[in-house]
Length: 288
Image (tube, rainbow, N blue to C red):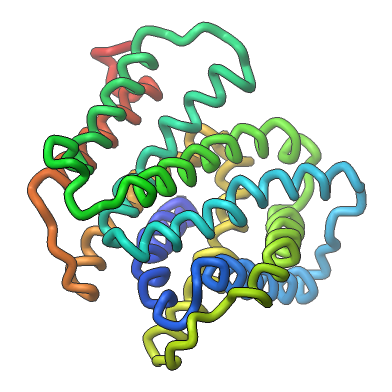
């Protein structure tokens, strides 16, 4: 579906936008601005379409949990990690999302035993991550804390998809309404941190300003609206596979626009991660 492809492309470019945004914003500033601009975009769409925000308090509580797992904490962690890692590494590790989603669907939200191919998929994905990081050389230029930040972010992504599927989508609320409320909650939660430590004192540049706008309007605004639609139409497991596209896009734009170096093991590891995700979701018949 068009929304699936568009989300993959926009989220793939987000790592480039984060890198540029850090030119004048701190990690807290990047996370807040993308949520605030995304919320503004979706609220305008909601007003034009005459779509009301959720009315039930319990829905807002569930949306705040999703915002914490999908916007607030990962938004800070990805930006923090990209102060020391390349956007390429961040984009490739983000491809672990289908595997973390699978893990939480099976272990936390269903409680059913894992199937053999799912265990194989998780194992292959782990090998892929180790390959991306080049662990035989001690993570290379990637500090251990930055790697943990990236892994923590994708772990929370894995929680958000099945949580949304179970507690929000059955209510039949408009994707625009859900995404608007989610980003409003995220921006409100991040506002104090932004006011205390939102900018780094560096001068504004055209690249940085345009990147923040793109990150907020498209990466958080339209993309999260599309994400709700995908989950409603195809399920949380399928929706999480949008990250199959993001590492490819992240690598291409990182090399072209940021002139980031690419080692042989980063794309190779990315392919292994995607293979693990495909196996874990039963998309390769040989393992099912």
